Length: 416
Image (cartoon, rainbow, N blue to C red; front, side, top):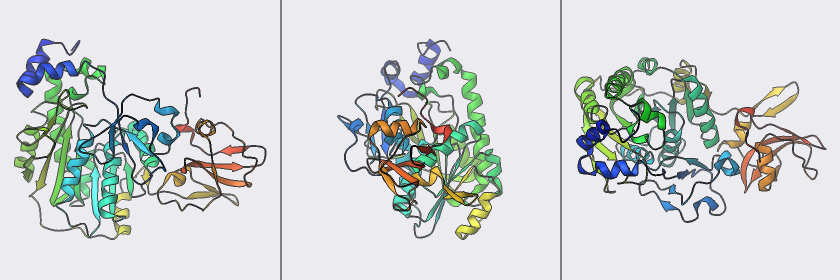
């Protein structure tokens, strides 16, 4: 499709959302809003400057719609996992997940799978929700089938800092061997992408009626492949960023009929439009992009719970060859114990384990750029460097300069 003004698309959109199609199309031609979600495990001493004149996201306690788009790369706390840049509509899936949590006994460890997780927005939202509801008693497996995207996901999980998140790169079919293992599965499936048209020109270019049908069938395969891994009585949270009935309600109805489940009737207090099986967020009606989400309770299969110790759960997950499993404190290189950069970012890091030095903003950016910095007043050896009391990473002070342990893959590449 050449542009969103294509009459075929407008006619199709009109059939899907009715009389608001013209307003939605107009909104999709405007600049996208910018929003962030704060990390409740990494509170800062005072309000972030980027939140000036911001608006709260109604369905996210930690979500804010910014008044303007800053250069996030030049914000040290962005690199420390203090907040995640995420569309406000995508945060609604987090709200739906928290509603799903209310149906479970939280006195035992919950096991959750985020099936199509890159780049990590929904995973970090789920991790925060699980930690608030369950404390340390949960396991979140975050999966992305495309290896390059899985690496980005792994980095974002590291920045967020929750050690209970495991990152994998597997086809959905691989999880079928974990029969009845998960209490909740979030499937934010690949789709025709209509809701992202103003953010992604390529989505406009790629769109066609044939793509919608192709995506619908692929989504059904994904659900069928992963279905055995969801326990009976467990919940599927299913979401897309398209308006298409064939990819949304019809697919959830197909899953209920063919795989065995009861659809959770949609309801919410935010005035968001509902469809037969879920919630539809439409640009122009909400500040963010297009999003659809609904829930299903699994009714098929045997009535059994897979009760495993944490160590047994980890052994099962190891079969998936995870890219990230917990947080390493570091490793010995000869007689020298070198702390892992991800340990500094983890909420499991015990402050005081190493001497700390607070950096000003420019020095913090130089550290994140992987420049050599000098800390003449600091003790020799490994130092935790911080900005606004939030950990950024480690350096090794060798006197006249410091060896920078910030990962090469995460360094700031722009001029600072």
